Length: 394
Image 1 (cartoon, helix red, strand yellow):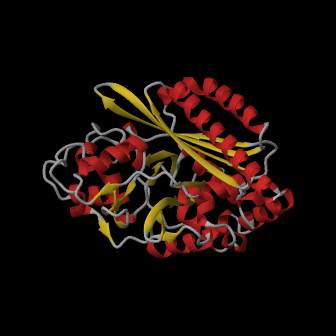
Image 2: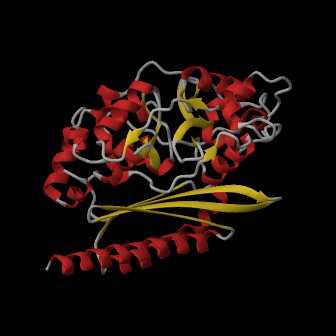
């Protein structure tokens, strides 16, 4: 079985049954940490650092009221560490025990969440489902051992060199809304990986920490080389290995990102997000799966325009080949003073092909239009190549 088999409704139904077979109650963790709305931000960050969890449920008088997330905090660099959690917590999705695993996978992709609380009818948290729990499900599914890494990996990878200053790595992470960046040598071989975890662990020991930005590297990083903080001897995976094997490595090494190599050269990146995205695509639905993540409240007024742009481009693509799923992740960062710049990552699955495109721009609707146009041109190119190959065979 490969990604192309997701078009086969019978095979898709069988795969969905395997994914949803265990049920939420069997994979949720009932040993979890919470914070209260009147706890300090630094207390929440301390729990994240100690447990490795990147989303912490906020509980008020035993009732689930929201979440405080690593990703949200990193975007609010001016927030004081002594601020109360209630000033930065956000509304977050939750499920009950009747939800399916593919339901949870879709919620994680839609909200870019690291874990989803499972609550009862009184809004009491009974457990949490983490990304790792879903990856463990994926590792046990036979069909995923027939899907190859190259079928779902992202082939466009931003990297840094050992000799780069840490600010360079931070700029890449902020610009693309990612947490880890591969480190390569002059020959293109992967020699390390640097992430927000290493940066925050380093900055945690610094004195005069007052804001979230002081921990996430907002200042004072220009003289530190990537080599000083990156994790060396990182785990990698071959481009032609299986998704099942990738899931096993992620679980055994407690990592979320795997550089993909061919002959020791970096050719892509595979994350837990990519695997969970594939699980979400298996959910039963009547139409194409479209997921947009990363839009903040200030940009949600663009939603109608973005939806229309997607409909128009998908209609064009459907004339060539029926698209199965589209995911679009939006990251926003300050590129010049108070001006915001947008970084978009789009992934389209159709006919057994996984196509990815990236776009950066100042105007969000225009950037969406441009990245969708790139996908359309890539689909047309793939179709042309396949037609030429058929002619050569004849």
